[in-house]
Length: 179
Image (cartoon, rainbow, N blue to C red):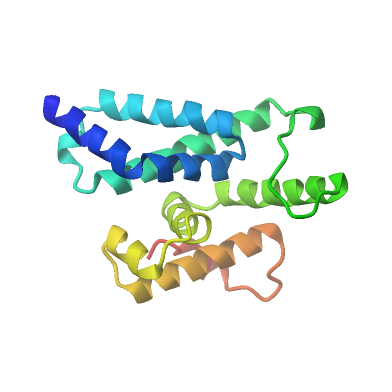
């Protein structure tokens, strides 16, 4: 187990900041991101499967994404009032613009929850973490072209969920997002 703790310390040093940033972007709350990063490392510490994991960074990222969306689902059940919303970072300082931006971001994040897990992970890696197609491909064991196609399909699926893709792909193509 000592070796497992060493791996986790190395992961925390190498990827802790990026995992925290990812959680902050997905939850829109710094305080929640701090709690979730702690929960992530507690779960990783208690996991008996770490020795079998080939890419600990990718495993931790996927677990972080799942934790963030689990938290978002729990918040839907405990609907927050407008007085408890955190202010998003914005160049436009008007309260109305901030509220509109926050509502739009909430809609997008809620729609991302409806995408299947592999497509959600690809979407988060590309459009939230802003990773290159080459990096995504390496982490998924695919080519850059396949990663680009996965990103395109997940974005198309998201547009269909949001109702902004009137002439989108057929349902069959959407179902095969993880190919």
